[in-house]
Image (cartoon, rainbow, N blue to C red; front, side, top):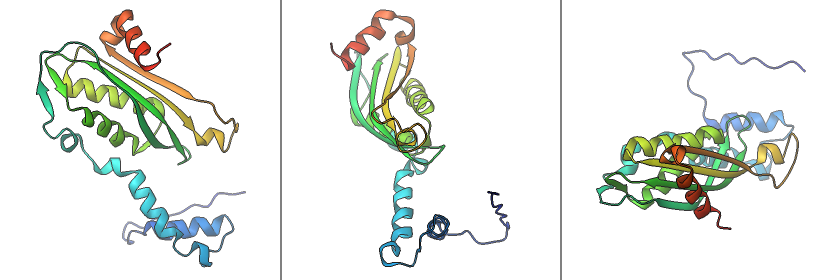
Length: 197
């Protein structure tokens, strides 16, 4: 089957997302005018705006001054942060848990900001590997800590609903920076905290 080529005139007006959704419905053999689908384009547009809201958020607004000086150099760990994202290859969801730790070097971050940071990056089109690195790299930049560790465990519907169709499989990615990369015992302490034996 030959692929259609779409040309966009630079002078044309932007086509609303709803119109694109109606086109997709027609392409798959549906009738966007039938009763059950009348409001689907609007619902899909609203859903995608929400699912990609991370593009319209920025780090400064999320941190919002919640950096505090504190004489604490022990590991700070937050585990089981719920995560929902869209795979950039098929626009299908992947979801799971994110575990984050850092070792302060005079600065600590308000704990809700870690959750919001995970949310900001996950609400973009992603691959899990990049998402893991973005969270870790950003915490290193913001806090200048002794180390940062991020582990994400997620199920990918692009693999479960299509392709190899293997349900229940989990992808695990990690990013270990600073002390977590250089010191085995620090990394092991973190892993034991998020996966107690």
